[in-house]
Length: 195
Image 1: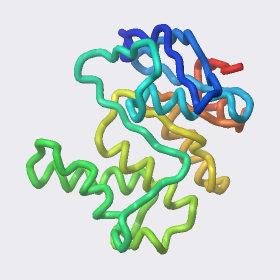
Image 2: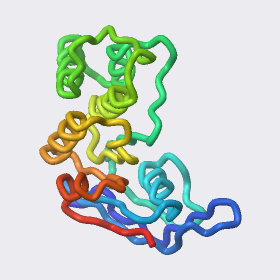
Image 3: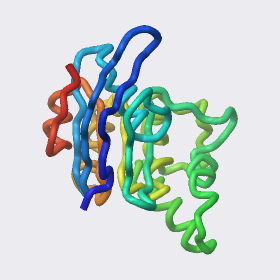
Image 4: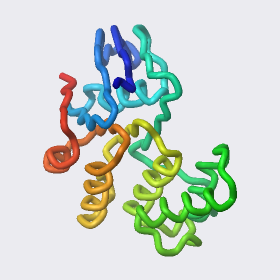
């Protein structure tokens, strides 16, 4: 069953430069798609379009009704002075959960991401742990499809292995922009190239 039912005639410019035009794409339940291409080809822009972060110049994107999306940008930003617990708690603040279910989801998410101390302040985290927290923040919201832009940036070898396992076994679909061919070979089942 399709999550992204249609993406047709998609066109996007950056200033006076045309990044791409007439893209057609679909994403199915459980699909793991890798987006590749040279720098400046528009991979990150296409990912942001698909995730609903920006609007196309032309064309349309149609998601299945009630599809939950998550988006992890290249550079994760967090409120100053927040803890990892507060970040994940805020991510699911709008969810209709009782206190026990909310606490269980938060603890499970932080545990899956490898956080053993939920009181850690975000400014004390390394780039790799900030990346893990950005991914955990989106996973806590139980997305149907997760869009990730260069997710291995700042991750050490252990972090990359964690992410490979997470994405390879996830019930949600994912679309990943990456230049890391080994990582893509491990986590995706299809590849689209922007050229």
